[in-house]
Length: 594
Image (cartoon, rainbow, N blue to C red; front, side, top):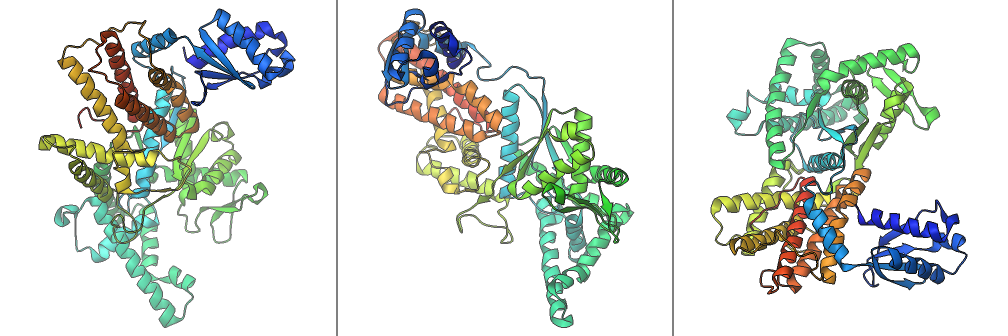
């Protein structure tokens, strides 16, 4: 049983006996602040109305009653705060209880099914730094929700159709000379991204020419640029299933999928279901037709379809263009409908950047107006901030975005270089050194991004993230490897740490570590309730930091008292297990040697 739950039950019983009129008053129990003596603190102010006594007198009366009939060894009162100290052998029992629970920290099955959509790349360019934060958040939130007992479906919606895809296709036709990933030696997603940039270069040149030579406004020139008109015609041909356009689309998207899969594998990301907008946009069109019949939408003279949300404090929203082609909202309507119908979801979480806040506000409202309020209210937008880099720290591909593949490899290289500088790879075989460098590089990248509250914009500094000191992934990974080394040496020396004397006198630092381990289930629940991996990241860091202080001050293997040594080994083993389990929820591997 969780300590806070245990204490709450005991204190409720005592308070109910002392002050019957306090029934229903919620108790406020928290860990005692480090500057005060005690393990847990009861805030007595909410009970004063029932006790009709001063805060100090109320706290003293409750403290005396608790010492008389529960696990409380002693107490002290600081104004309206009752600081409680549990008996020492209680903590030995708590450690044994944690060690015996193979699923410690994980919740019981809830019966709820939740879909988490993340990644959602466009097939006209490679994944970039923004996608990395998206993927890491989505994967970690999925793992955390699973740990809380939910059935989770990790979903990827691939934006594989639309004008942006046609731009890459058209530029490849015009300027590619048949270039392929095989002939160029480029990953497929990089090759297609190259032609997206090529389109933009020619498009801007045409717009400039129309403005200068035909004196058009820039806005008019953007619409009338020949290459843009060709791209729009290609989109119309694609929606009409023109065999030539459709075949080119399949070929180039195939190149991109192979490239994406390689990047996902490097990040350790996987999906349970992959949806394609090319397969859901038609259902979205059907929903638009349904909305027209119901009078939810209206058609303008240019044949485009809109919804008027001004009475809801929003504006008018386009759902179908005048030429009949769909927009993002169209296909998102279809995708949401298909997912809830097919999977009987209890909740749908979209992991999408905060620039799309308005889009999801509109999506939920439109679905509600179409009559799907029973499940549209269970859509949640996990809105996250952008990732920024220090000027000049990382190379940008085409001078616009930081490529995910480049970033991953740079992180691994930096991890290898820094590990060598610090002597952490001395005597390590080359193959193992490569594996550890990749684990540390990716761990640094993932931890640095996930330790920040998702809602916040963050600054990512690659070299700072690989520091082996401070709140970083490598610091936590090194702590885990250090504990594994201690346990390995104990096994090699034949030191027993499977059996622990329950009467060993615990040091205050050991009790602090057990208190931290005790918090792990509540931390997982909090992270699940808030969809915030940062809660787990910072908990694991605090646990690793506390253990390192303990390790520095107290001998483990050289401790002469066998009972004390066994206790310290068991405590170390459980700290390593919780570090490993917490990091796994972040999608981070921890090495056993380093």
